[in-house]
Amino acid sequence: MYFTDRGIEELVGRRGEESVTFEWLAARLQEFVDHNPQFEVSVERLATWLARLDDEDD
Image (tube, rainbow, N blue to C red; front, side, top):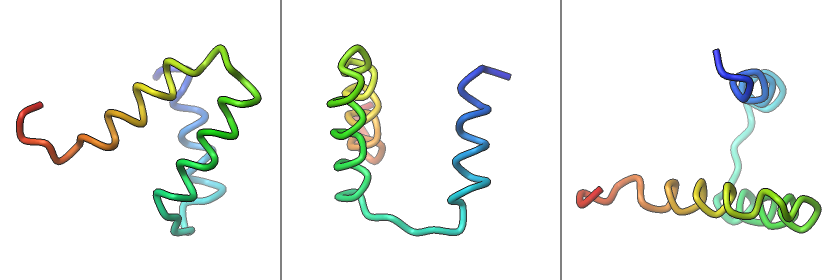
C-alpha cells in the first residue's frame, strides 16, 4: 500500500456518497495549490491526466 492510499481511503470514507462537479474539483485543486505551491507540478499532472482519460491517443 502506498502512503497516498490512506488519504484516498479517507476521502472515500468521508465523502464517498457525495457527488461533485469537475468545476468544484478544479476550484479545490486551485485552492490547494494556492496554499501549497510546492505541489503545483503534481496537481497539474493529476489534472491533465484526469482531463485526458478518454483520449484514445494515450
